[in-house]
Amino acid sequence: MLVLGIESSAHTFGVGIVKDGEVIANEKSMYSIGTHGMLPSRVAEFHAKVAKKVIGNALQKAGVKIKEIEGIGYTKGPGIGTCLQIGLLAAKTLAYRLNVPIAPVNHAVAHIEIAKHFGKLKDPIALYVSGGNSQILKLDKLSMRYRVLGETLDIGVGNMLDSFARSANLDPAWGSTVERVAKGGSYMAMPYTVKGMDFTFTGLLTYAKRQIGKARIEDLCYSLQETAYAMLCEATERALLLTKSKELCVCGGVAQSTRLKEMLAKLASLHRTKFGYAPNEFNADNGAMIAYVAEKALKSGHAEKLDACTITQKYRIENAEVYI
Amino acid sequence: MRLLSEGAEAKIYLVSIFGTLLLVKKRHAKPYRASQLDIMLRKMRTKKEAHAMLVAKNAGVSVPAVYATGSDEIYMELIKGKLMRDSAFDRKIIADVGIELAKLHSAGIAHGDFTPANILLTNKGVCIIDFGLAEPNAGIEEKAIDLLLMKRSLSKEFYLLFENAYAKAYANSSAVLRRLAEIEKRGRYQARTIANV
Image 1 (spheres, chains in turn brown, cyan):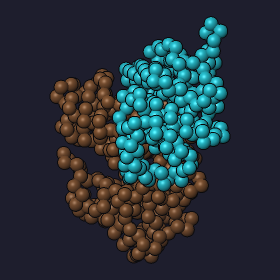
Image 2 (tube, one colour; image 1 turned 60 degrees about the horizontal axis):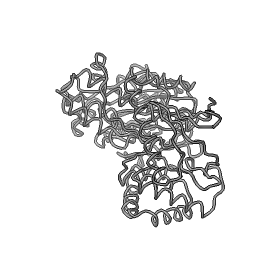
Image 3 (cartoon, one colour; image 1 turned 90 degrees about the vertical axis):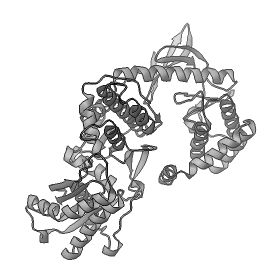
């Protein structure tokens, strides 16, 4: 089946095309967050402008004509309302014009499923880390829904790193710059908060921000990153031992971090656990993961009626059924 | 030294010293995190755990006695019993667990992982184990979390028995129960509880 998926939950407008479980196109255009972060109305405006072009690019890359598309997928949530609306509109228009079935997709489920696909994993513990989300999950086979074993009790790890980067005037102001600057740093103690399999980042962020100008920026970046990632690793380790799972994957935007993957690989080998993840273009927000999950939904007969297609800003992953 | 069990944070060994059997809880190094952070965490947590156990023991809570500590290990009394999680238990035992938690909270300590998997049933009554997540200077929030974990682990009838015994034995219990009600209303926890059913 040839399925086109649209992702627009945050700064990225992404379009992916999947054919029989294999990704054949993954095009995207990203709103530049500059120094202000994301203004919802501006990002939506950006998505509306680039939508046609990105869809065109994806079709060209895949070498298929729009009329050959047999199904559409879109991100139902979670995400920024105005941004999700644009993706929904584009998806509904395509489904209506092409007269093909449509499937709403949970953004978090898509991140995990694409990591399982590329990492060749069957039933892993998933560490899902992005700007707005930081969760440890496992699929419950009875309900076919992901169950949250642990999660951030306040902000996502990506937003935490981005927020620090903005306060420290790093350019560009996001987590990958923190990782680059961290390379020359040495460790200084920072607040470390893990509660069982849950964790919190605001105390750490406040502390690090207050040290700006007092300590070397390299040391701050290094220590902030090491502390945050160690917290994620500890909670993940607990989840692995609790569930006795022998597979682990990492996904979401922060999964692009080389250091985080290095730490998780060491953690996995400590417990003789198979560790996998997707290439970076599929860890960042992308349309291919949406197409990938939508194809499974459509193939298993779970298309949604066009009029019933909506968005849900706070679409919790526990409420999304998973089709394999 | 014989390995008895392995948790995410520590390993428990059985050792014989001068013919007496003891338990050693050792926090091994974690190669995935920065070594300075690793050493600091293990040292700090070992100290905190031993401290909480000592304070609890002095306050008359039924916990294993601490004999010695190192920078990453605690030597403690071996208690023979069966985990409450794996046993049948009656109303008397449930009430005793409530009273032990009341004594612990009165001493200013929250356990941090208060579930039937960390309560031993022995010939001499209940005994609380694994203070790895304990907070010796606990606030109301941490104490309420102890109740929340128990509430998730027990049937409604047993939980109410437990809560009643706790409330009678702890002077400040009404504040803790109020906070528990607040925590249960928080969004993330609600979603988690629904998902766990």
